[in-house]
Length: 225
Image: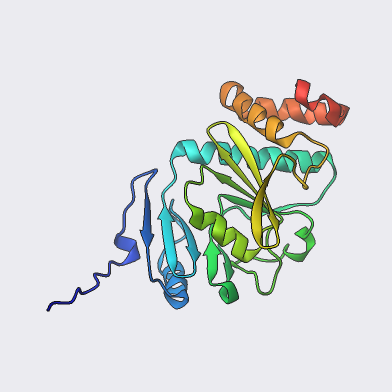
């Protein structure tokens, strides 16, 4: 009787084409942390880890562009409401006690912005609160949302094929919502896709300038911009 011998491949030797994803099972927390130390900051891949399963994803340019646009829109809306925020981008989020970690497309601290202003490294969420809002583009795997659930991010936006879904954490599980607690008075699921489409057609800088003007006039005018 023969036994299978596991084949291990250094993470640095895994080269993914844009848009591809690889899943690795039976990865311990210690191995996950070692992988984070091994890989360099100058890379295009994103990681998600939950209870032994590691996913490595290489996003397409079509994935990155809407994500950056939405992040800019959110920050502009927050500025218009004179609210503080801190953008931590794809900073690695980790919770050892939950055996979970991931690198979001974008994450922002809003209510808890003051608590993380001096944080410069990966976020240990056993010592600081999780981001108030995470933004993802085209999430096709349950691993990412399960990792978000485990680390306790209260609100996750997922933009896919021109539509925005809002996931709110309730009793440890995400439920889909048509409204955003971050912007309770704005029709976010309609507004964000509309503005993303405008940015892709007219150019982000022009749309953002127009939006800033409309915000100055009053948020009731935003949907007609």
